[in-house]
Structures are given as structure tokens and as C-alpha cells.
Image 1 (cartoon, helix red, strand yellow):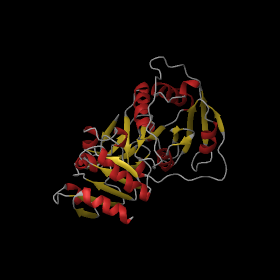
Image 2 (cartoon, rainbow, N blue to C red):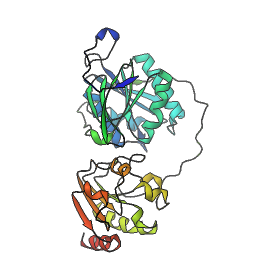
Image 3 (cartoon, helix red, strand yellow):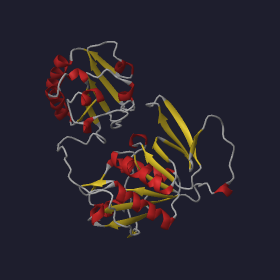
Image 4 (tube, rainbow, N blue to C red):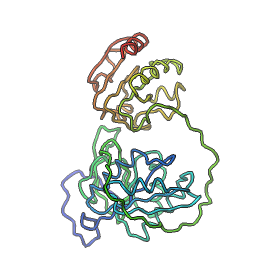
Length: 334
């Protein structure tokens, strides 16, 4: 369980088994796709290292050798556990959750950590339920081995929570921590505990959108469109601009719900959280749910014909203009 800290908390006795930096041992679940480690996992590694104890990485897959080699050379990783089995080929959450639980039981980790991505949000709650502990989601800060900072109410309030559980199950907001670097020497590897095959679900198919543009989660430049784009065809204006500056393209929930673009492009409270160097909001009014997903961007540019649009309150630069005129003109000058 965890409790919201509203007032100063008394110092608690370590006899109850709370983890301190001296006895912290963290297990980091590695997310990977196409033999590449997800960028958000590097941020989660930094968060895990902040706890002050050892960090063991868990890599699961059908043929994870190349991922294991990459992970073993990440700064902060003390050991790599490898689960090689066909059951992990498609990253089904039930299989990974069972693996996490068996690994924790064998090694006694005090913290189990993953990125707050679709993958992490799918696996970690299942592991928490199996261990009968409360998950601490989307943390943006670490104040101690049992005390964490996380946004609530779409980022309008920041809660500091203290967990009394023996095992802390945590997902990390990638934009809140820098990416981990690489080490000179490779960490040792060993086999992860065996788990029973999952029979509650099976992989059927996967439909992915292919793009040469950067991944939305890790792009340093993002151009996002909202309801003001009017239809999906008009998003081509944003694609043309994005290609000029090497940016990823995103969208507000309003644009996704209207069917303009796929929901994989959604940015906001119920979509992806981004914090690029440059964020260009085109035809986005700036609803609070959208701001929760991009307000940490280093530089925010807003293009909207409504001078009263809330997006201008968080923008570093604003252009009050018709996007269908402004965007093509800007693209020509890039």
C-alpha cells in the first residue's frame, strides 16, 4: 500500500523492513523491440540507479542475445538475468508478469521497475497483483527508497507517496530522468528462473505503422496537430514540415477521436508523454489533458487562429494565424 504525504512524516523504524539505500536491490524490466532496447528503458535505468543500490536487468525474449549484449554495457547495470524462451517472443504481459514474480521470489529484490510505457503499464500491474502489493505509477522523482513523487490530476498536482510494501512495483516517466549511458566493461549474465507457460492468452497478430520518422516517445522534435486540422488528409501539412526538420508527428486526443490519425500518435494524459527540445502545436486548443503530455517540452511553439486558446499560456512562442496558411509558408522557409 502507499499513502499520500500531506504533512511531515515521522521517522520510521527500520525494524519493519523498509528498504534503505544500503539494502536496495532493484530489478529493471528491459523493454525491447526488433533487437533494440526501448529509449524509455534507459530513463528507467537512471531512476533505478538513483535508489542507490544494485540494479539487475531482466531481458526476456525468444532470441535476446543482441539485446543482452547491449544491456550488459549500460552504465548502472550490475548483472543481467536472461530468460530465453519462445513464450516471450511477443511480450505477452501475463508471461512477463509471471517471470517477474518468480525472479523476485528467487532473488528477493526490493524494487521492480519498468518504464511507464504501454508495455510497462501492461506488465507491472499484473506483477503487483500477483505479489499483492500496490503499484506506484508514473513517478517523476525519488526522495528515498520508499518515497516517490508522481503527478496526479493530469499533472495539476504533485503527490509525494510513501510505500509500506516490502516490494515496490514502480513505473517511471521517461521524460523525468535522463537516459543512462554506457559502461566500459560488460556486466555478468546468468539465466533467469524458469516459469510455467502462460495459457490464459495467445498472440494472434500485430499491425504496426511503419515510418522513417523518429519514434514519438524519444524524438527531440515533435509536431502535433489537433482538431483544427479538420481531417486526416490535412495532416500531410505536418508530415511535410516534420520531414524538413527531422521531427516526429503527434496528435491531440480530439484529433485521434475524430479519426484523423491512428491512436499511436496520441499525446496527452491518456496517450504518450513527450518532452522534446522543440514541440510545435498546430490547431491544438490546449486542453488540460493534452498539456499533461507535453508541457515539459523545452521549447513550445503554438499555431492557432484563436488568440484565447489555452495553449498560448504554456507556449514560449505563439503565432495567431490560420494554420492552413502559416504551416505551408513556414515549411517553405525551412
